[in-house]
Length: 153
Image (cartoon, rainbow, N blue to C red; front, side, top):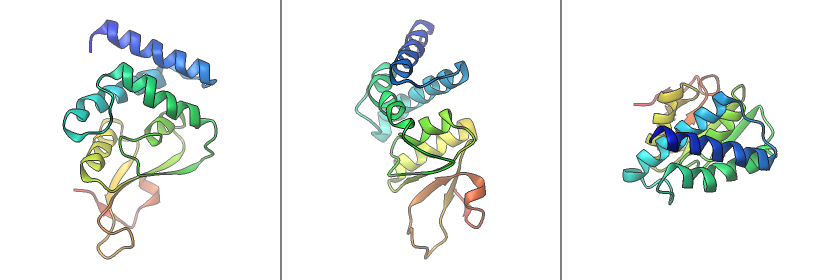
């Protein structure tokens, strides 16, 4: 993404947040822009979203997540069927002190969520133990919420 495109993306995110009454810091804007870029890169092989570029993703999907953010109450939140991480990743950026649990059953999308974790170190991806009630699903959680589970490979 060119610097001009990146500035346009941050401006679009800022405008959407302002319209929705959400206050964003420069750090949060940068993280949202990076997240949009990561989704678009992964979308080529993981089919995460219908958006083909960062700006389209921001307008449609990040704006939707920003819209629901004020209705979500923390500090513990579960995003079931997280897919590309919406609204969970956006909530994690807006409320870094919250514990967010992102649950995704499809392996390609769960791998994407693991990549987001690697980029930000904000959540830990874990496999539930064999025979647990969650089956073979991957669960991305904050470290303190799943101490009993084995590390994701």
